[in-house]
Length: 65
Image (cartoon, rainbow, N blue to C red):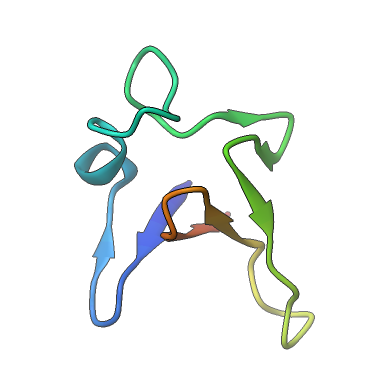
């Protein structure tokens, strides 16, 4: 499940991505084969952390399994 992290909030991608020009046709992040296609991977601080990405709009997206 993808979530967007803000300073003190966790948001669902549909709350942010609906208005993004980089989102797919359904207003969701471009998530394919376990990778965010509209952003880049951020380095993990600890191995136990979930995968984190920074989208082209500057939001931090986390893949929580």
